[in-house]
Image 1 (cartoon, rainbow, N blue to C red):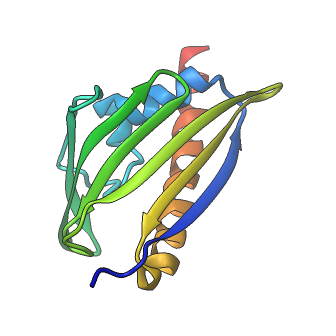
Image 2: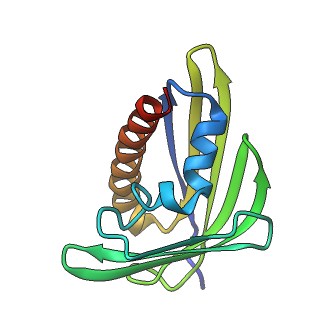
Length: 146
């Protein structure tokens, strides 16, 4: 019997347009700076279309980690849904939904990750770290673009 999955939800405002945030998720060069196995990502490949896949490999705490996913829904710049597999942690694909809503000062990112109850704390911590790195990358690219 499979365990019931629970939704871990995150919301974070960003002071940039939703297009910029969306592109940070779907551009392999940018994503390599913040998504998943950051800092030492040795390989990031992204084919951001429905049925397309992504692959992120790198090192974390000295160990090799790999993340694989399939895009289930891609609506630029508002919605990204993918099945995520982090084989170090789980052998099951988990559904992640990213939604970007326009706000006066930029946009708000809402992420929902359906995971097993025992991974809830880990998912919370990991996504919080991921979003913090995303904020840094968006701030840097903003300065460079200006």
